[in-house]
Amino acid sequence: MDTVHSVGTVDPAPRAAGVVVEPTHVAAAARLGVPVVAVIGWPTGRHHSVIKAAEARLSAETGASEVWLAVDAELAEDSAVLADVIAVRQALPPGTLFGVIPGASAAAVQAAHQVGADALAVSADMDIPDAAVPVAVYGGPDDLDSIIAALEAGAARVYPGRVKQRDCA
Image (cartoon, rainbow, N blue to C red; front, side, top):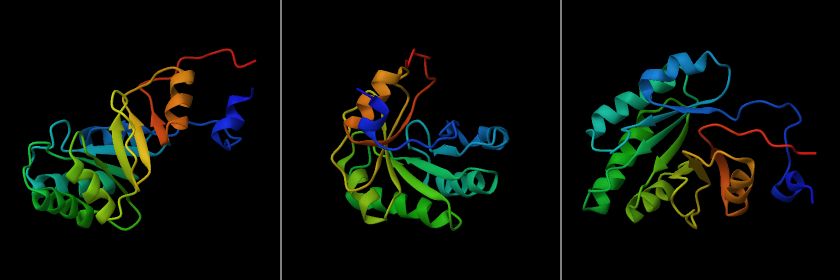
């Protein structure tokens, strides 16, 4: 069975899908010539919303084509989660893609949908949620079979730490 055809079309020009980095590494990553995703408020999401908004704006201005917001899983109120997501979304220049890293927060998944996020970014060790927002998996898996399995499970994109080569003949 040709696994490439079982998961969709493939761009004929091989290239990296992109890299996921912290905001301090955006400028260096942008020099690689691949799309750059900056993780804002990483890893806990406990930064103040104003700080996260500034990180997002600066990341976009220094080369990130997309930013993912880490949401504080400890926020007790849905309105606080929504306010955090809105603050960062509004700080982005037009054309910058926006994603939300919800962790275990159902309120963050809902907020991502409400603000029209471009991605819901979930760790590879989490289940892929059934969401209206396209899902991006990060932090592994690092082999081709696992990447294909994540795509078949509903991920729109997968960002492994690195891809191990495999004989595809």
